[in-house]
Figure: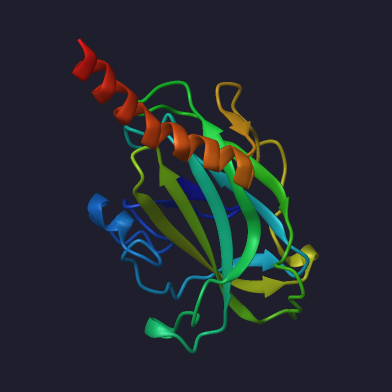
Length: 203
């Protein structure tokens, strides 16, 4: 799952902003795929910005869930944030063209800051990208950022923020099962073996 901002490219399990090589299996390491905090921070607009991702970098990613979170400051491990509990983009599902590695990108052109977040130019934060693959494993990566006024950030345009036609999206939602429906299901689950046993006993 390569991750791109307008200035740098990051690949989950391949490299980080400073291009340090990382084993692919480390992408499953919470919280940033086994990578340390980068000294080379990407500038990010103080009102939110764009994020582009190539989800099919590795095989097995024909679909998956995707999240974007933010952690603020440098008081956590490795001079990173204490936590990533600030949601920037709620969960959504992406779909790709195949289960093998595939090219293609999707871009979220305007990701807002987390709710109630206030920042100023020069503040440090880390954007955490989480992809839960179809087999259930989560892959993590991070982009270490420094907030800047919009005029000091590379322009987002069609050359660095675009959506490939063979990548799709789905909503993720929950539905509630009423107590009556649940009790009927449980009752049938209990009754079925009894009915089968009694029928077997009669034959």
